[in-house]
Length: 225
Picture 1 (cartoon, rainbow, N blue to C red):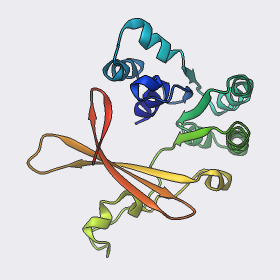
Picture 2 (picture 1 turned 30 degrees about the horizontal axis):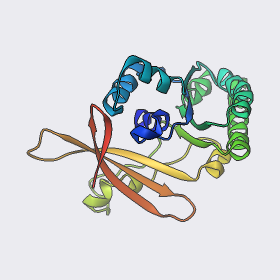
Picture 3 (picture 1 turned 180 degrees about the vertical axis):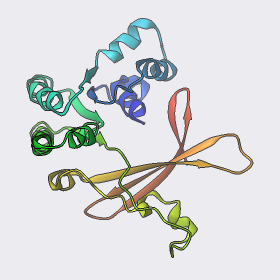
Picture 4 (picture 1 turned 180 degrees about the horizontal axis):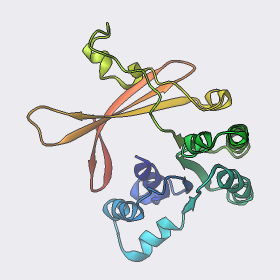
């Protein structure tokens, strides 16, 4: 889905894009650049090498391997956001990568880790407000309540991502900064070889919920009406 968002942003307006710049901070080292290039080639009306390069010039990929490096990276990016008004989207995948690693180190590292995360979130809040950025940050979905066979929840509720009662484990400041929580799930229909995915977005203040289904194609995510 992040590749879908990135391509939508960096594509030229003539090809249905927004023609803005994106910073992607990869802390899991999972980002597939070849996949992004493939999506661009399928969406561009003129998918020659030069046109693809022009799109990629609006994309900035950064790798971080620790919470300290993430914090320093965010500080260094402030000048970049200030000097590039066309930079509109910041993606962090994922914000929780180093949480359990630092926690498992024990001792003084726990308080230091919590301090680093809090500083990262404070800086993110500042960047979003001052530079009018759109921020997407993924977190690991390992803190959630699951239903057992004796649960009173109905089958439809069990399959609804919002019904999993995700339990936030990052600091309360992050819960305050977050405006929308998005859940993804996979649906395998009986008698069909194709896999359908669904995305459920919940606005945390208004409690408004939007759910859409989509499939993955060579051109990226394709939403189903």
